[in-house]
Length: 218
Length: 378
Image (cartoon, rainbow over all chains, first blue to last red; front, side, top):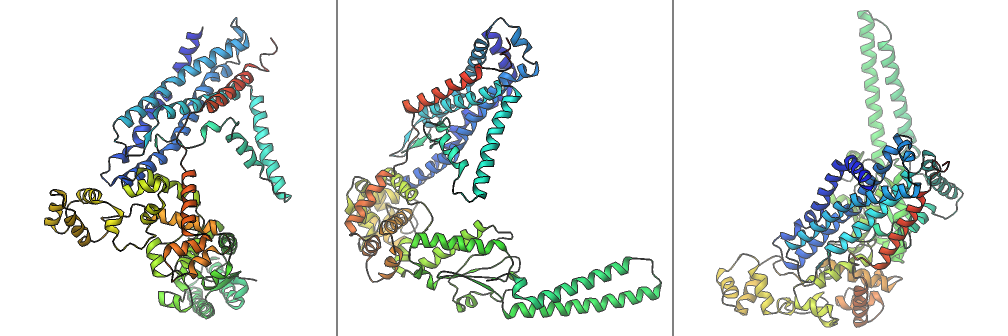
């Protein structure tokens, strides 16, 4: 059953996933293009670091993107078919969810591996200035975790009904409305900032997306 | 205080309004119905009269505006001059910038000599101040043109930038040459120190390496704080000089270049560097590092640090920074070095805690997903 679920999921997402995988492979290579400039070492290193830093935002964006893609596609057909197919299967809900989740995880793997290989290849062809180090494996691990968290969030949201999605939306609107009301009342509380800080700082779920995604650093 | 053009120029406003009403009436009557030749001539004559009246009104309005061509905003000691303009964002932006300046400088009096001009690009054609000499005659020390539809943030940014230049120009030429072109007051000191850290780590200069290893004398030399008559020999050793010259093709004396690079003659290297103009030889610690040091000294010095920096024009740069920071030169460099090491950029790391937290959240989300209101009926 797992292979059938995995195969159908693969069929739904293969083209966008292929583009994401190519993008993941190319991203580290593109980020070190400034490395070949024949400039004095210090400036070359600074240029290289700035170039790597300017590309770093794309790693987290790509991780969030593939998580969203794979997670939403996992449940799209069930929603379209009113869950009749899933209910007709002789499995419990939790087991069915695990099968879908496992299939999604396997589909994330090629993109993560492509990024890791791209990063290794990129640093292999760059003569690193003295004092700088490459972090291809740490970057790939971070990317894998970010994709996993993104997949988990969107998987949980997508697995619910339209009513669940509505609840989530109402909570978000509620926070924004409370923030506006508090500000209008003159209360010096930035509710949105607090919520965001809570999400991106430890132990928030989005902590893995923060920080510097540097393939090459000091 | 009303800086709106409508408040400041009521006569001009009234004339403008009358002219507009006249033109509108003419247009309406001329297009209302089919006309005979006689009526047509009459309308043309009326229109010509209206055009003359409007032109006269415009001329009068221009005279009124040119007689008093600017608005002045005074916030504390900061004076900002703008073209007469109803831009609402200007006032908000100037107040915002003034608050930032006050928070950073903590000594408003420095701004006494700071008159900033913010030309409004929409009406600059009317401005009397077209030349630099005119601006200087009015005591304006810096200007920053506004974009067409500026937000308060745009205005504040321009005021800050102009104020930074104006404040920097209060320093003497020695300091200005050392830390050109200005000292940013809003940038984070930590970011500057972080880049200095990177510079020290990646620099091929031995002096930078010694500075990184906490040789504060080397740091002082590298930053250009000590008065060495010959930076060519103090910044780099013979091998580094030769390497620097070899990186670039010969620009002047080919004989010296050859002797330096091929025959390894250090005398030839020094002769060559003395003759070559420009930036062939850069200091081991760049201008950004110097600026980061000044920002650090200002932050360490707290109240009136910038004022102390500006007022010590007769001293060496090291002593000036020391006065601004309120500590001795050695203590300043030691504190700067400690802050520099603390500002080390966090490399991309994967820690067990990060991994465990992420996986923990994924398990929680998986548990949430495994429950479904739709399936609960089974």
